[in-house]
Length: 202
Image (spheres, rainbow, N blue to C red):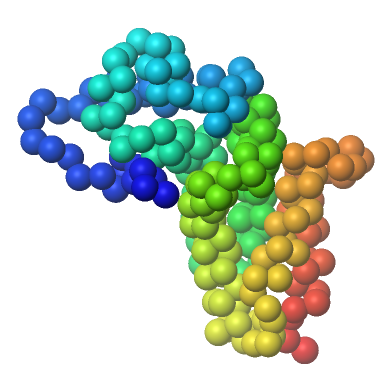
């Protein structure tokens, strides 16, 4: 994507320091519009600027384009990456699995399901989604590799399939409420223990 660079990556030009209040207003306006039903395709810089009470130039000074702004906004929605402690492979996996589909921002329940059609229709939106979740996938991959190097997990496991097995149940439960009788407080541990039973060294 030509404008995927986020504020975290973009070089800043010298001059007047950026207004954090304006940054916050722009991010919040983006999330509000998405939560109110605007599709990613229909969302415009003009609408975001109007909701945030800033000019379009203010947005373009901070983000290269709409996709870069969306990347930062959706990262905000997902929250801070969980940080495994590195002492127990099982505990670190439970931490990561427990974070899947869990968002502290109530707008996420309205926004995240609406991303699915956009991701399926547009290569650009697919890449946007991948940029959001790739760091989370990498964390889980590193924990599994550590388990292999420590001799806890079989060296022949398929890491990508294993991650899918760990991730799928939490996503389907939190996004679709697939089975209301499942307890989300204990589900991460149950999922991890079930998968570990099949990939442990014998």
